[in-house]
Amino acid sequence: MNTILEHMTGFHTLTDDVIAMDFLMNAKSGVKNYAMAVTECTTPEIKQILMKQLDEAIDSHEKITIYMMQRGLYHPYHIAEQIQLDLKNIQTAMDIPS
Image (cartoon, rainbow, N blue to C red):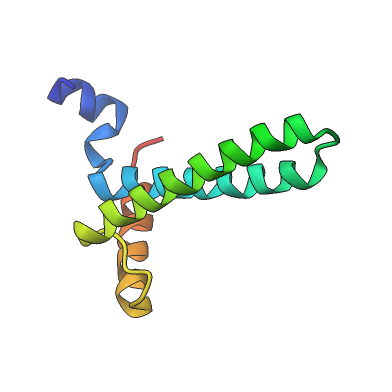
């Protein structure tokens, strides 16, 4: 994106880690929603389709998690480090002009 447009829209503050974390949270939400839908379906055919979608959502979540961990963007096993990253991401989000 053009640097001028990035500053006008506030996108210059959207770092890779903020975008990746948003992607991870959406993937996690998808897993939860598919899991809930599987428990609510009424036919075996629909359940089978939803189970396939759930498996794919879990795979996507795993790939995003591995990507983030390899790049130091996510520390699920080191809570103190993760809290520092979260605080940094919160500040970045708050600095985006409204």
